[in-house]
Image (cartoon, rainbow, N blue to C red; front, side):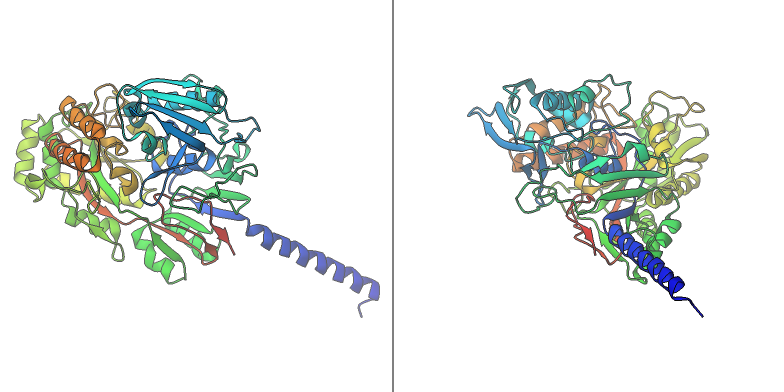
Length: 527
C-alpha cells in the first residue's frame, strides 16, 4: 500500500516531469534542426563563392539591397537613394539604428570598407570596381558612389545576386589582411553566428538576432520583412544522404536542405513535404585551364562531344525528378536562355572526340576527376563523366573527398598532378545565380586572376561579357548575350550538362517555407 506521503512525492515528481516535457516541446518549436547541403568552408561573406556560403552570408550579414521575386533590387539597409541626372553619382542613406551583433552601430565607414573589400577581391564586385571613380562618406549615415560611366546594374549587384555577396561587415573585419581568417563573424543580419558551438564538419549554430530591425514592407522574394521566428537554427552536417533522409523521416531533424532524387519517393511516403526551388539548377563539367590537355581548346571540344545530357540528367534527377536538356550558358526558359552556338555538340561523337584529344597532345596519361559523395548530383555526374571518358579510351582516376576539401582543391592555383592538381570536375549551381553572366562567375573570362576555379582566360570572350554588362537596357543586353553565348561555345569555359530540379524536404509542422532564389530561414516557423 502506497503511503500518502510517498504518493504526494511521486505526484510532485510526475508533475515536474510533465512540466519539463511540456517546456521541452515548447522549446523545440523555437529550434529548427537542419541538415544543410554542405558544411561552410569560408566565413567571410565577401569571399565565400558557393551556395552554402550565400545562404550563411545572408543569415548573418545584411546587404544594402535584396532581390524581390522579379529579381529587382529593393532597399534593405537603406532609407533613401538619389541618383544624379547624369547617372554617375549615387547618394545612399542608411536606415538609422542599424547595429552589429556586438552592439556597435553600423556606419558608412563599415559600409565603404565592406564594399571596397568585395569590389576589389571578387569577380562580381570587380565589374563594379572598374567602373567606380570613388566611394566616400558624407556623414555616419550617408555616402556617395561616383561612377566613371553609367552602369545600370549597380543596385542589382549590391543586392547580392550571387556569391560572394556585398555583405556589410565591421570596418575592422573588412580591412583585415587577406591572409587572416575570419573565425568569429559579426554581422548585422537576422541571425547571429555562434562561434563557441562551431564544430567543423559536424555542427553550425545560429541564434536569432533580437535587435534586427526587420523592414515593414511585406516579404517579397528576399526583400521586405525578414521576421525570425526561431530562437536557434542548428545545422548538423550529415555526409550520408540516406542517413539524413532517415533522420528527417523519424523527426530527428526538421529540414533537409537538399534531397537526392532517389530519396524523394521514400520521403513522400512518410508525409514529408518535398519542394523544388524557384529556377532549375544547371549542371556542367569544368576544366582546369592551368594544366594540359584541357588548356587546349581541342581537348575541351572532345569533352563536349562526349557529354550526353539525355544520359546524364535522368540519372541525376531520378525517376520522380524533373530535368531538361539545355545548351545555354544561362538557364533555358529565362530571358537569356538561348542555345545558339551549341549546334556542333548536340550529338555524341566518340571517334571525333578521340581525334581531338590526340591533336591536343593527350598520350594516355591518367586524367584526374575530382568528386564528392556528399552531394549526390556531383557524385552521379562524376561517375557518368568517368564512364564516358573511358569509353573514349581515356585513362581515368576519380578522387573523391568531402565537399570542403573538394572546394579547397579546386580553388588552388598552379598545382601539379600529384601535388593536389586535377583535370576536371562536375558541378551544379542554382539557376538564380547562373542565369546571368554577372553572377555566373564561371563565365568570367578575365585574365587578371579573378575568375572562378579552373581559371580560364579569354580576352575576346571577356570583352563580350563586358559589352553585355554595359548594355543600357534589357533588349540590348539580350542581343549582347547572344554574341557572348556564341563565343562561349567556341572557347568552352565549361560544358553544359543539362538542368534539373533540386528540392528541399521538411516535416509537416514546418510552415512558411518559400520557393525563393535560395533557402532562407526567416518568415518560417514550426507548429
